[in-house]
Length: 113
Length: 114
Image (cartoon, rainbow over all chains, first blue to last red):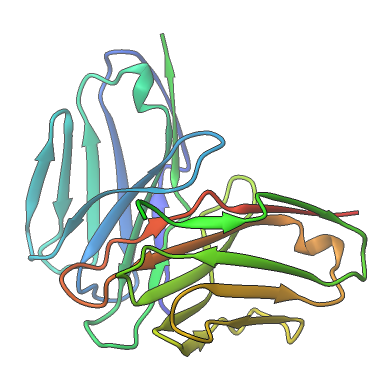
């Protein structure tokens, strides 16, 4: 079955440092979604990428979708304490009416002030 | 309706008891998902609905778990004969079928089986 992996599992950074998490799928994805879960909270949708090679930015966050649509990355520039949380990637295999989204295990980010 | 709601938020039950959780999705969303999340893990897919039809159920899910969405609106998840291993956060999410697949999560129901 489809597997979605993320590395690293944990990342501790000093405030102001950059952070990157990588997502890899065993199958081609129709799109990739990124979610953030704060400690004690629930996952919150951040962004969706659809096109091969697509890059999107949200302020200090940069999201990329690989050319083969099997991998993605999230890069945060100059981390802040508000960036603390776990970042999940998720995606469906193909665009059909009956497909489900598979979540990766997440990367937990800690920011040291 | 501005978000997904779940009830109850917390449930403590004794092993062997049955529990039922409710999820109310965003009203115009026709897809509804149930996930289970344990500490330090990502949401684990349990099942999902498109309108009232249950389209897929995780193979990891035992027969003690059942979900319904009778009128294509709210959904219930029932766990029969609970076991300590069922202790987890149960998350519900909803999404549109077309125009984007982003899921909107509810606050979850935390189940503790003693």
